[in-house]
Amino acid sequence: MGNSPAQGLSAIEASGRFKRLGSNTIDEAPATNLARLALRQFESPLVLILIFGGAVTALLKEWTEAGIFLAVVLGSASLGFFQEYRATPAITKLRQRLALMVKVIRDGVSSNIEAALLVPGDIVRLSAGSAKSTKFPTISSASA
Image 1 (cartoon, rainbow, N blue to C red):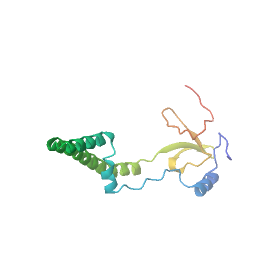
Image 2: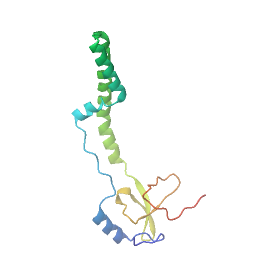
Image 3: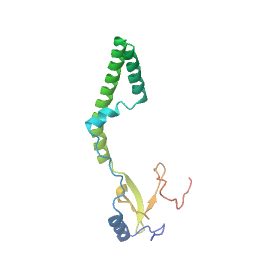
Image 4: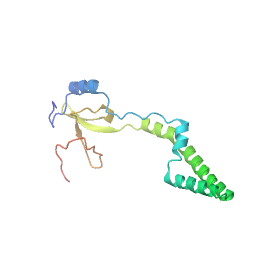
């Protein structure tokens, strides 16, 4: 890969790989439209059981019970819809503010960079509590 554990990649090599391969990020899923968000509230098995129960009671002409089933399903779906609708922008803002930093060795110097700037071949230094992707091979480790 053009590096050694002690030196890491050179800044020039890392820059070239970044230009060639792009950012180390996961593409964002397209925004869910309101109709899809509303329909998703009816995918829960519990909600489907309630709909089935309401349909059976309606077929038996038990209108009061069918109305109760319908009210519970609509109440649950409305609550889920509004909670998810309000949470979506907050999650988007949080993702934008959260910049994951990693410690890499480049040109023999350890420095902190954004995880989006990692390229294949970077030597990443981990410490206690660091999350490690399974895609990173472990060069060496030491137990305290």
